Image (cartoon, rainbow, N blue to C red; front, side):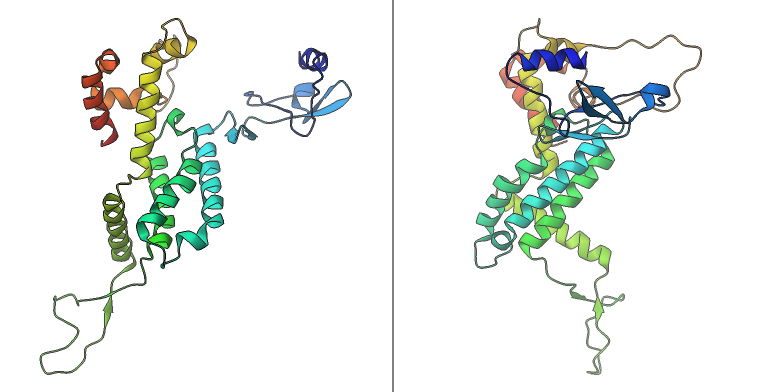
Length: 276
């Protein structure tokens, strides 16, 4: 089949590039010829990837196993690369903080959330997303070092007889909590939401676009498709796989799809979904 595709491309003046053409497979264990790492197509060696291998296509990492986590790691690497491109501007205290946050939102955030509307974000992935954003924003805001706090009995650093007491610094946990709250307040003052809220807003926008499209399109049918339970003697161990639309039903009820044609109700549900 791949040889036929190569011949069809050649008729239009196109050719396969062995270094950029990959074959993905979802077979757990390959034996014999299927277990080879390369296949021959018109004299070219085309790499045959394993089930847990990934390849980059249109700026996304694609694989069959742990695809969501692989893509999230890829997006965080892209975001950090873009952050260090503009690090001098983002961490320059002479520039207004609002301007630096706007630069962060226009340069770094799009790299981090590229294609995020298609993610099935789990709680662990959400924590990793916020963790990376706060690490970057701590460098932008300049949270500083640990502060001197009161001792455990809430007394000041000086005793009643005038003698200096040992300085007590805030713990690492207290520093993380304080800087996280400071970042949230500064983002709110600048009118910028965190990456989780932006992800949910993008996902809601995509859902509205799919629901308002032609019902005969495959994208609409996939969204409304409800797979039945497979008949087998042994049930699958563990929780069911999370589907892309599960978050809508959990937040807005099972009839959330019927609100797509009511703009007022849809806007109310959007605010509830994005702030959840």
